[in-house]
Image 1 (tube, one colour):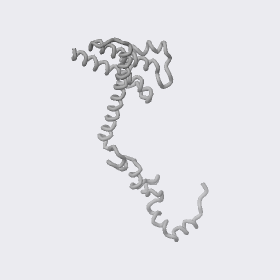
Image 2: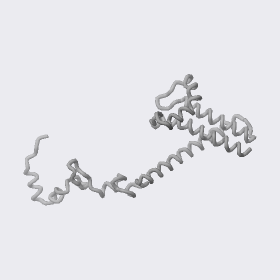
Image 3: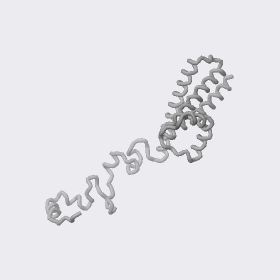
Image 4: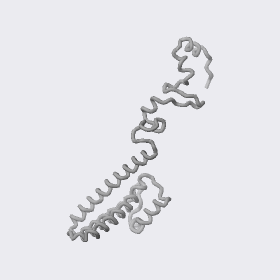
Length: 186
C-alpha cells in the first residue's frame, strides 16, 4: 500500500508541476514553441482547453490554467487520502490541497534557484561579482579596478580620460594648452 501511495504521489507531483509550469511560463514570457513548452502544453491541454471555453484568457495570467492547477491538486489530494485510508472530508481535502500546492511551489522555486546557481558556477561566473573573472562578472568592484576601452580602442581609466591624456591633465601647462585650443562646433 505504501508503494502505491508513493508512486501515485510522485505522478501527481509531476502533473502538478506541469500545470504549475503552464501558469508560470506566460508570466516570465517563456516561449512555448520549443520541445519542453510543447510537452507542457500536451500534458495540460486536455483540462485547460475546456476551461478556456468557460473562462476567457487573461493578458498575463491565464485563469483557466490556475483553475486547472487547483483542480488537479485537489483531485490528487483526494485520491491520495483515499489510497492512504484517510477521510474524504471537504475540509481535509481543501487544507491538504492548499498545503500540498504550497509545498510543491516552494520546492519548485528552491530547485530552480539551486539549478540557476549551479549553472552560474559551471559557466565560470561565480556567485559573487568579481570572484571569477572581473570583466565577466561586471560587479561594481570589478568595474572600479579594471580599465575600460573607448570607441577608438584605447584603454581608458575609470575617470574617463584616455591614458595618454590622464598624465598631462594634472600638469598646469597642459591644461592651459588644452584651454587655448579652439573648440569645434558640434
